[in-house]
Amino acid sequence: MVMPRPLVAGNWKMNGLRADGVALSRAVAAIDNVDCDVLICPPATLLTEIAASIAGSPVALGAQDCHAEAKGAHTGDVSAEMLKDAGCRFVIVGHSERRANHGETDAQVRAKAEAAHRAGLVAVVCLGETGQERDEGKTIAVVTRQLGESVPAAATAANTVIAYEPVWAIGTGRTPTLAEIAEVHGRIRAELSARFRDGAEIRILYGGSVNARNAAEILRISDVNGALVGGASLDAQSFLAICRSAV
Ligand code: PGA
Image 1 (cartoon, rainbow, N blue to C red):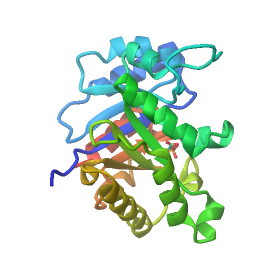
Image 2: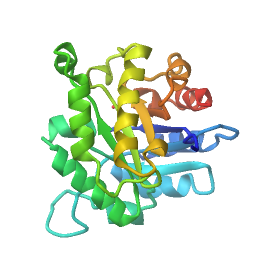
Image 3: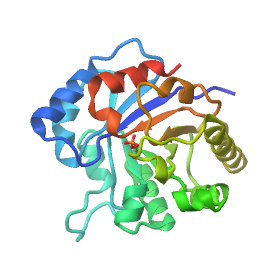
Image 4: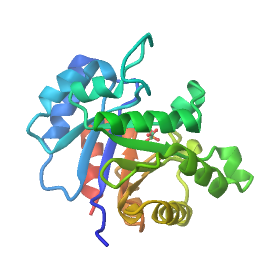
């Protein structure tokens, strides 16, 4: 079995105007000698400009969401094909903020991941339990359901990345224990291996309050194949330190 190469992804969320965003992308693109793949996901308005600013660097470009359709009467939406055309290689789908703020269901998330595949993008499919679900002992049940219903049948290690992000850990400075992360990632790995031919090689990222101090120990957990980083990805030094923690 080939060990997946780690992926460290920065999710900028709704942050960044042109000047700051391009400067941040340039600082990240200066990275070299890291043992991981590096991805930044700026807001849609900056994609084209940042595609140019990171061209020729080892850093890949991704978007934060896409519509399931390729084109049509969907005011305000952006299709996976448009993202590909703007220079993206990846798109995040099913982030908990989309699930919560826009009521996205597992079926909609799966349709978006299928759209990503149709357009030739890698789908980063996000999963994770709320604090209440964890307190009620439902973490494994929720994550297993989301995995089963949000990940397309045609997922492969080349076109899909899973991101486990406990909702209560996002932006809070709180993280699960290393054992709790290991338990969920182990379960996700077992499900992926049972369902997909190369499921053992599909990358599983951990996300939720990853920072330069806790990244190394989180990234050493088996079946943690990288990180999806929000707040700490807005600071080039923190994000680069997290990338350097990946081995
Ligand atoms: P955070 O966000 O690192 O700020 O907790 C992670 C995410 O939402 O992807």
